[in-house]
Image 1 (cartoon, helix red, strand yellow):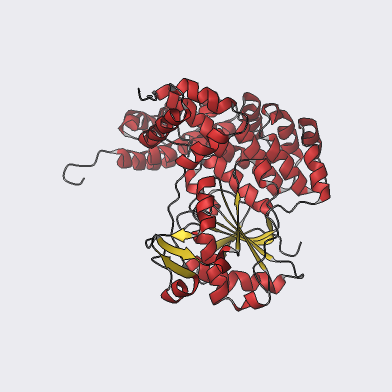
Image 2 (cartoon, helix red, strand yellow; image 1 turned 90 degrees about the horizontal axis):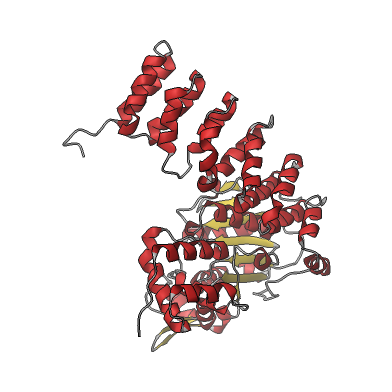
Length: 213
Length: 280
């Protein structure tokens, strides 16, 4: 046997036929195809259509195949218009834990688009959404992350939400968080976890003594 | 003749445009690298400033200027037998597993990208010929792709420097290369073993025909992409592979940090990633 060259492009007549109907309406129809590979390809191609966010979100809520969900989420991240971002926010309120986690992961990659709505998410009426918003901040590449977290520990009434914010501040915080952490310890003086986590965060953000750098 | 200058606004416009077209985002730290090449292309195209050049770039019908820019902006340095433990894994573990479950006589298909100047694809061919007895019983198709058309021409020509061939075992060097004034010319057996193609991994219409692969080598490419482009590339590989197919990344890259679509496989020689669903 040997090396062979059959041509990189392996295309069946049926695939050629499909190529001709890859307009927007055809792709939307294909999002409901019985074949998961066809649905993935439809979602992938729809990433190039700015008006595809709504149908992609509709499909995401029904889609059970993990690989298709992942491609739909990537397409939404690529489009990243207000419809896509608001749709991901709506997923944070879902009863489906997988969908919530997928939305959090997607939003972590959209710092520019998520930044304008972050303050609103951090004061959402649902404490779970406030915690999810902090989860998004974990790896959101945005210069305001620390300022947002300081805002949380200064004003947030729920101890669990504050605890989540302090955990993250101990990773990303600087001396700018010092006063807010001290205030938090005073505000939740009888909460052992807050005392522990805030003390740890204060220790981590403390300036390195001279001679140890 | 005046030399064009690139302002911060110009850079940001170009950064966004180039990212949308290729998935490659140049951060501010790459300003010098990008500016130098943009100025070169502005001069070459006869444009008088960035604005005129950028307008031409965006609206040209055939994409020739964009391709010229891509060729200039991509990094192409590699060498034979780079990260060679992965080639050991290929012949010792991956290929035997693929052969064991293969039910038909269709060729084993390997996709290597980015091809750069061809060293990786030719290394694969050499390893199969020299280290894998299965080559006597199975057809193999090696396709190697790159976004840069200049480097593809270089790959097809198969002429390499002494530096590039530094890690080629002496016996292979004698067997598959001819010493020339400019370096080492790879022989026709290996040149005939690899098909080189141009592909933009971020363009669905480019990658759609690439499917039914058993193995993909994609080493040290995803590090140049941002998070979304990396995910998009991983999803493209998922559909390009047969269920059970394998993907090998560079030593500093981890599929687990990019996508949950693949399973980790720990072999004796290397850690690789596998599309689930063998036998489906």
